[in-house]
Length: 347
Image (cartoon, rainbow, N blue to C red; front, side):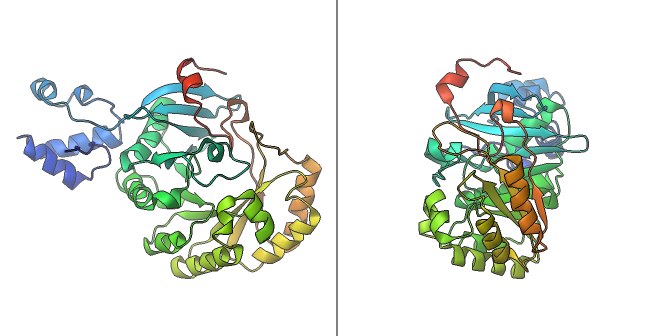
């Protein structure tokens, strides 16, 4: 029988486990604090527990191993984490003056196969469990010695294809780690019926929908899954989501030079999103290997933005972070053998 790791369990569940060990139930609160606030990696390191008990039991906490840590010139840190089964994932810590954001992975690899995304070219291995999602946040928080204030499910994988563990992780991060749900964003390229299921959970998170194209023809060329989830249906599901949750949407749009950044497509996109309770996030493309795309010139980005703003859309252009460590948006990819064989920090 597989024993669930202690990380990811609620306080009542930890209380049940502690009682089953013949320990007083107040130790559950101590265990909860060491797991979720201190980020302990081994049970033997919980020094408030009797030494005899720590030597007697060896429960699995559910923590990963940092296989590599890459530091970008702007202070962004990309972590290659080795899971208990040997699989590797990447997570990113993005510090600024007033916050620490973690870019969280939800799967090992990704099945969506978007043509301009490094993770999509890696293929799909499996979904992550709740404790493996929490571990990423605690790893960054402990390593960077700062409290995580924001997180985005924009790492490896499609969160809505692993929806139940993602929802559970959001709840644990909120209730046990003290991170506001309003400071969390769940990103999706669009999965049929899953936006409705997410709405039913009544989370206070932000939903970010990756459009990347304002027409069905172009979108399904860039996003293979778009063939099975027409743009018109995706947008209707988004409207239903806003109506049900009363939460504003964010639309993500990666700008690819000469592909989806023309003035004509800017007008088409703006007309499509005009009147929404939404925010448009333009993302200049971050180069990856094996993809025939280029980043638009600054004047192209500005022209696209200006056209969209003329339709009174709320827009930001995402500032690129972590580029020198291959940690920017769309660049996450587990190059397992190469990275594990060279675990030194790189600047």
